[in-house]
Image (tube, rainbow, N blue to C red; front, top):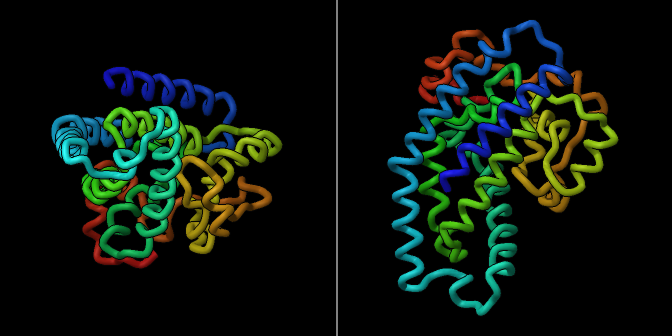
Length: 259
C-alpha cells in the first residue's frame, strides 16, 4: 500500500514529460501553471483518503469479512479467480457510477468540476473534487461488501484504475493505429477525449474507466475521426477563474446545474 503513491507519482511524471515531447494538442498555456491546482487537489484528496476514507473502508470490509457477507465469501474459489471476478464486476460498477453522475444534478455538481478543465492532460486525472471523492467512497461501500472484496483486492483495482486514468486523460500524441488496438481492451486517450468534449452528445459517451468493453456492450461508445478538432471542457466554467484552485473548489456551489 505504501508503494501505491510512489508508483502513481512516477507514472504521472513520465507521462507528463512525454506529453511535452509528443503533444496531441499544442497549447500556448504554461503546462506547469495548468498542473499546479491539480497537484494541490491531489495532495488534499490524498490526505482525505489516508486519514479518513481508508479507515472507513477498512472498517466496512473487516465487518463484512467477520460476518461473512459478500459473493466471494459464499464461493469456494482460488484467490486469483476471486480477484479476476471482483475486478470485472467492480469495473462494471464504475461504468454505471460514471453514467449516473451526469444524470443526478447533486452528483453532477461535483463531477463537473472534473469536466470543467479546458486543457485536458494527464494532470486532469488528479482533478476530482474532494466532495466527489467522499460521495463515491461511501456509495461504493455497499458494492464492495456485496462483492466480498478484500482490502488488498480493492487497492489493486485502484492502482490499476489510477494508472489507466493518468494514461487516458493524457495529452500524448498516440498514432490512431495504436490507439485503436489498445482500445480493444482498455480506455485510450482518443476514446476519453470524446467523453471530455464540450458537445453534450459526446460527453454522454465513453463512460468506462478501465475496460473498454462495457461501452461497446451498452452501445455508449462514440469516436470522432479527428480528435484534434475536439474542444474539451464544458460550455460553462470556461473562464480562468474556474480553472484556478479556488474556482475549482467552489464549482459545486454554482447555481447553474445545466450541462
